[in-house]
Image (tube, rainbow, N blue to C red; front, top):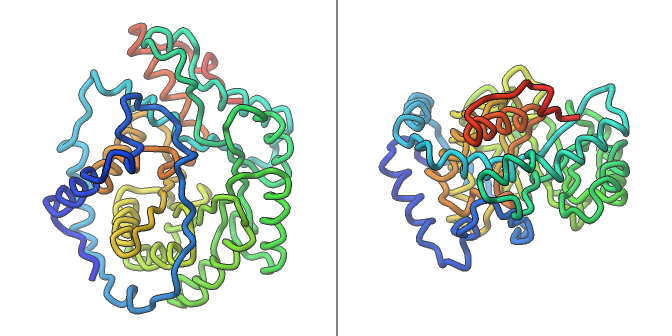
Length: 354
């Protein structure tokens, strides 16, 4: 049975993960912002285990107490904030998913992904030569060729939202073909959306089968499964959907499309990352986590990094196991870095995204 309760249990679990062999913990590098995406080992999934789901119960009050205590218990000191903010940048899926997207906007976004922070700011911190980039650029399928061309040679992957994003209600074959076309166009990562009805009706076998089919269509591409947790109705449903998606082969589980009424929240994130921890304990397979929607400030980013460190250990602070889905977060982080470097903020237009 999955338990959600004490901070002591969470601390001991995170410490155990931290004691993993050094060559298996990419987060324990001296340089806190090395991307590390090449360390990812794809999740091949497991058979469907309905009995794993039967014991899941989530105590909402305990979850809320735990997440409310995190900022105070693990405040990031001023001298460490710069390292945390640089780390956060390396984990951003820089995103544009607007109806008025143009090739020009996507190319500008890709340029920002390759050089996310002004050179004078990086020079001030002595890290101008680290090759800092964002984790990926996330676009609709139609913009994949443009993004692939703009990012050529940079090492920054293109992530494509797929499978009838955001509602996921297109016919199954259409959704599978969309994945195949995006991969053929050069997308290295695919963000899929699931059929919410499977979650709402508790049809976990159907959810497993659907995600498994998407995984096969992804081929070599990394697959992030968007659960749309704001539409699940309860934290217990979030936990069961998370575990089912991982059994089916998800390389990442992701909170939201960013277009639901409720997107990423700390309580939902705690439930999902504890399922990631339980799945790793059962199978030895590490699965990544991507909160998305409503994450706009540097403070938000630091709080999520603290959650990951507390619950899963340093290994989950690398972009092969953690991403933010965000469009405006980078601008605020860059402004905060500018303040740490020079003691003042510049106007927003100096940190334009696209």
